[in-house]
Amino acid sequence: MKIYVQVFLVSKRQQIVDLYVEINKAQPVLEIDVPDVISSSKKRVIDQACAALQKVSFDCTVLRY
Image 1: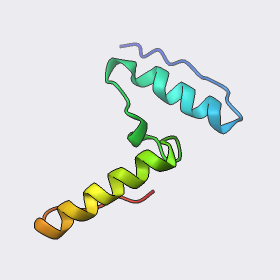
Image 2: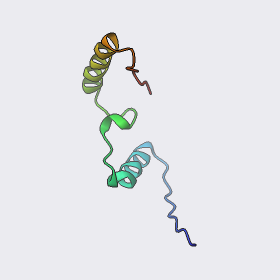
Image 3: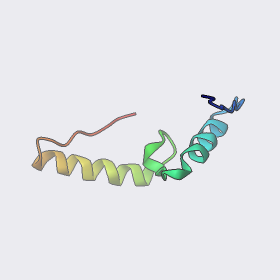
Image 4: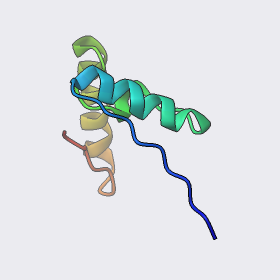
């Protein structure tokens, strides 16, 4: 059995994010899946929605990066 791997040299945060998105194109990556990429206004709306859901559901967990 042979396993082929490809090595990518990256040194900057944006290169890492770009590579992560490229590798995961087979399964779409949402902005919210990558820390510090989503705009602060979108994150605020999502955090507010999670907080509201947490009040009505004991199974809801707010993830923080």
